[in-house]
Image (cartoon, rainbow over all chains, first blue to last red; front, side, top):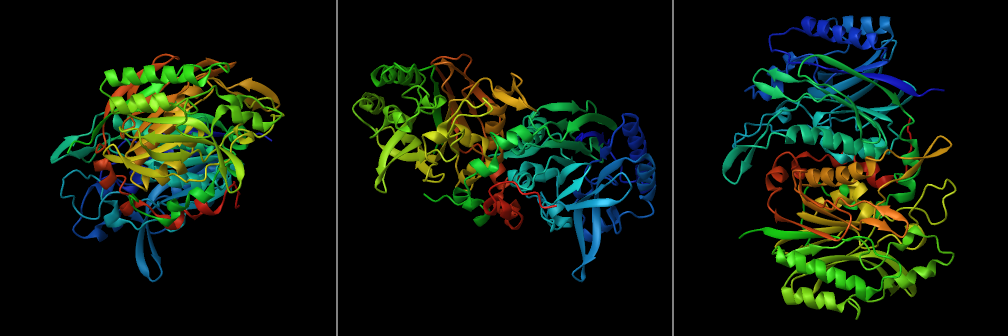
Amino acid sequence: MSRVVRVAAAQMGPIARAEGRAEVVDRLIAQLHKAHSFGADLVIYPEMALTTFFPRWVFDDPNEADAFCEAAMPNPAIQPLFDEAARLQVGFSLGYAELTQEEGRKRRFNASILVDGTGAIVGKYRKVHIPGLAHADPDGCASNFEKRYFENGNLGFPVFRAFGGVLGMCICNDRRWPEAWRVMGLQGAELVMCGYNTGATRMVMEGNRRVMEPAHLATEHNLLVMRAAAYQNCCWVVGVAKAGAEEGSNFLGDTCIIAPTGDVVAKAVGLGDEVIVADCDLSAGDYNRRSIFNFEAHRQLQHYGLITAQRGVKVPV
Amino acid sequence: MSRVVRVAAAQMGPIARAEGRAEVVDRLIAQLHKAHSFGADLVIYPEMALTTFFPRWVFDDPNEADAFCEAAMPNPAIQPLFDEAARLQVGFSLGYAELTQEEGRKRRFNASILVDGTGAIVGKYRKVHIPGLAHADPDGCASNFEKRYFENGNLGFPVFRAFGGVLGMCICNDRRWPEAWRVMGLQGAELVMCGYNTGATRMVMEGNRRVMEPAHLATEHNLLVMRAAAYQNCCWVVGVAKAGAEEGSNFLGDTCIIAPTGDVVAKAVGLGDEVIVADCDLSAGDYNRRSIFNFEAHRQLQHYGLITAQRGVKVPV
């Protein structure tokens, strides 16, 4: 049985604050059509693909975030995407801000879902590594305040049997944490989808001075962490950007499909709505899984204890 | 107080099986002199820098390995290196095969030491991730049989206060495992030294066929894992090769010094004895350590359990 999945990564250009769900869903459907024209089985959209990336702002009242959230998925505004994807028998993964009532209170998560070719939701993930700050940055460097609006995901890093393989999801900042990838790798993930909204530049402190980080680093770091994760966990990685100039933010593009070798096999060139595609053989990581990265043969748990025992840095000497 | 350490990476060309310790130590001292001419504070030599890389062979009697091991460190053959380094007040790190009597039996480890500018051994590490096979490979792909000769290191991933900072060591295959780097990162490692003997080509199975892996991958993977580790743990990484055509093996060069940004700031160009140098500001990772990679603020231990609970892959669904 062939285990090749034709995967499309649907980079999105900017979404303005004034843009309504209906307009955005029209764009998502246009991307779906382009992916279908490539013969794709699965289309991957970015993190928070339905609205502007609101956590760039520090709202006095964090509940202002609710307007950017979905209280149900699907919901009437999003249903046309589900319907059209099911009609074309194309699956998709979609990132969105989630508003939910759980444990007797209102909660917000930065979420993504995996939808199969019949339109059924077969997987759900909530971003574990919520980045940024909960309050304005005294240094004036921060451009991300997700900690003000979102709880850390409470579903762990689940994997899902779908599209003939074992698939996982992570979101944006998660990709910088090797722990996230390893937990999915230990569950046999063969393809991991990762949407992101990531600044193309970054301000940092150099001593007491606020300076711009060298310009190549944002692109380098984005590729570096996803390529390393693909190689070290023998899986495909699909990184999908919300890109371009959005409400004063300049976001990276660099949407890419990465093989288990760490090779980038497809890559977006622009900063707008753009679809790239590749055939992903889900067995491509198998030889490394039984040789150089045979976890059972090579991992040495007895020396990894700090990873789960200690959260922050402690210099022992 | 300045926290800049001038670090030299002393790549070694091949060492023939017939080459004795005295000849090799002469080469190490020549490298030391070149490093000293650059004003280096610390010289880093590769893995198993005193002999040929014997685990390419499958000896019928594994005890044949003893001839390539050091039963004491220093010992009379190596003492001239210690003496000359102390005279020049240059520290060094040296990889070697270790033969020891512990727990009432003979044991072999793939080890490295850190020596300060007075010639005192201030750190010792034993390779945790022993790669390869213990027996000949039925597929005919393997070129590394370290598991036949070495036990997995039993010292964990210690860090050492030396050269004004917090330093760690890992060896060759360790660099492919993000767990190794994270355990050092959690202890505040600011510079990690990693010697290696790594094939420049690799045979793999493609279905039932034995084929060569695409030629760019060995170089790519070497840089990829060390650069990602440097970025994700906010530390300097110094990767030092035994390079070139040695007893039928073709080893990678690509000795490099990597900043906490993931940037390669110095790199060897050839496959012989070669010294590269860079000024490593041990504070260079500090801003990331308190922002994007503030472990205390961002790590989510409650979702990392599998990393220390489960050795091999188990697909849960």
